[in-house]
Length: 309
Image 1 (tube, rainbow, N blue to C red):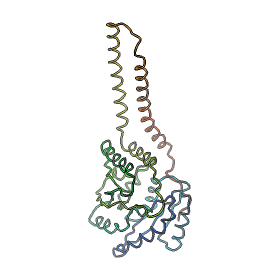
Image 2: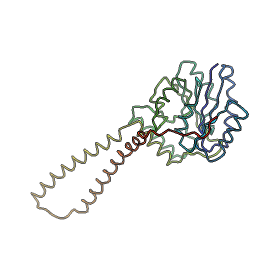
Image 3: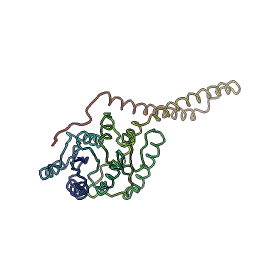
Image 4: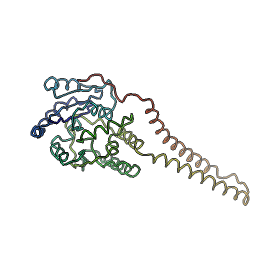
């Protein structure tokens, strides 16, 4: 009998813990027909509400429910990694607790695994319920990533993904501290089937992803899976060096022909400020890569566990 591990990262999701449990096991009768057992792993990412207590109640009623509770908030990426480490199943699925990842898709996803796919991933074809400005920048991010990175990241991709054990082991082999799971999924490869579905709005509670957090998360992805920003900084440096050399020649020729007028200092100040801004911008790019390297070489644990059952 196979075991399916369902990993559910949670942060302040006490309202959705029970609803997710009910919805999941309402849609897994299919797996009973396939002789597949289910274990449900809630990963509490340092919630400030009663998420852990709600999971504990479920565990007391159903031994298939388990909890890994962090000592503080380490982020969803750490929660995903912890869930993959904890999962024992030959099949592993990642899902959000807010029911935006429909459990009703699981039978179809498993069908593709039976056909020989190594993983089945999902992507949203609509962004119903999202602010238009947020949807616009999300699309621009995916377009940019696929231009500057060799790792393919599908537009609208969700973390909702059913994987075989060899895919999970490949992901666990990537022990980097700065994690961008969507990029890691693409980097490990394997035969993946994509399922499309329309966006499902959150059932209860509010999203934990503000525009600013999504922006910082996008920077994580760019830095983790592309060195193009470093190349841009280098090209800009070479361009301004060449421009400076040309301007030196122009100034020398102009002085020899027309003398040395003192006019033009406002434009000179503007040029100095512009070039100084470019230098700081390029230095910031280098600093971002250096900061990620700094965090990696510290070799700190990705997460710390407060409670585990």
